[in-house]
Image 1 (spheres, rainbow, N blue to C red):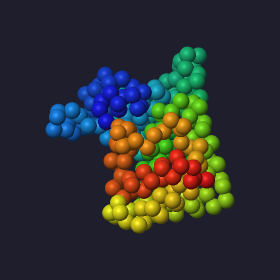
Image 2: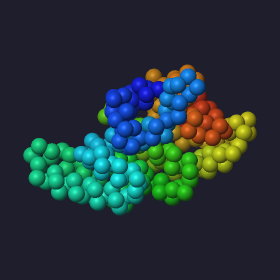
Image 3: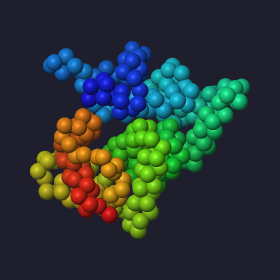
Image 4: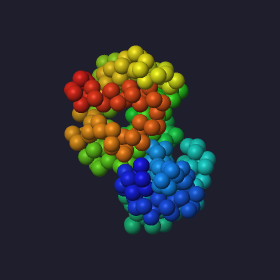
Length: 252
């Protein structure tokens, strides 16, 4: 992705992206032979998290500490200090304090990808038994990114669709099996027959209405290129086939 595409994905300005580079919050991407910076999905994940933290009222120095430490305990300490400061400005920032309190009192503590909404945190807790799956960890990061960039209606649709999928009989077991199949493809060839098996298993976990009507499985889509580049080749091919299956109506 170019810098403008990255900024648009996370709904910030290119000036903000450059400022975060200057402050050392967002790593500088490598440059292509033509001199342009090429941003990856990892940059979008980090940028989305910075945006969530700053929207809670954290200063950039506090955000830097949270990103450097990347531990739930440190984040809770920072948010607690911010909550005490907000108490002195209660009339102007009542809504922000409500959001903070919901995060601090979340059952099971803050997820590693936090802060996220209580609904997404609850979804992460439902899948805690697959916390050792590398693919499940990537999935949680992607869900946090989508929640940050989606509009309220889109977020509600996402949470409802995923919750319904997990609540279906055998839903959690199917998700665990799909993650396992995808994890096995980390070093596989894209032509491996297990790719199709993983794609069908993943499609069986996801409801068709999870996808926006405007989604196009287009190789020229810059976000999809960055998305696929974040996975091993065989995993990316399995996900690509999953999207095709869902667009064709082969999902549940």
